[in-house]
Image (spheres, rainbow, N blue to C red):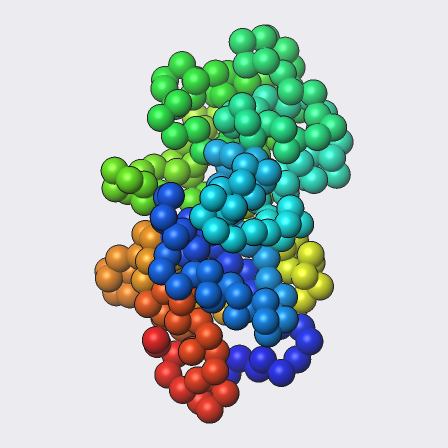
Length: 274
């Protein structure tokens, strides 16, 4: 059972599909966040969103009716910028939305139409911007000698948009790995390094942490492979068939709104499903 009576407890909370769905809040999400704050439970929003910088995420929060600080949000872009700095990779080809580039600091962002040598190729979610020419340009950079490192801003397979399920970054990373005979450095979910960096910010250990997400693979299974218990919510991309496989979440909730009730029920050994 999860022991909530230690000072090492922490919550890692996905955003899209858990707190909001597109431009709509999940019912009861703000009340759940208020409850978390009132009980002084350390938490961090962890998202694989690479289509916008953290500052834009905070603006979205305000529009939706809640607020957060920059240091309460962990994104693959922040993790990637740190990796590039740690490994002294300065010249970089950024395949990310223009607005997201502002979160990359201390790098020389090479224009994609320039034939310059680069130290790394960073790939995030470009959505409908992807076409053959753009994907092929990333491939061309990766075929330089010496070969630059391929940095994946997460390996999420798909997400649920207003028009249904849509491809995320992982399929494009897999195509580039195959074509360029390389292996990407993953700095977002489901990489353990991303979860470890997130917990480090909370000064918490994996054994006393919970990951709350709507992705049975990218959130729950990924976290549990890193020693973090995973809670699956039935919002966002959740499908009933998610429960038919080999992955068993630590708890299954109708939504994050059920978190306070589930939390209290575990004090008396209540059900893992709410």
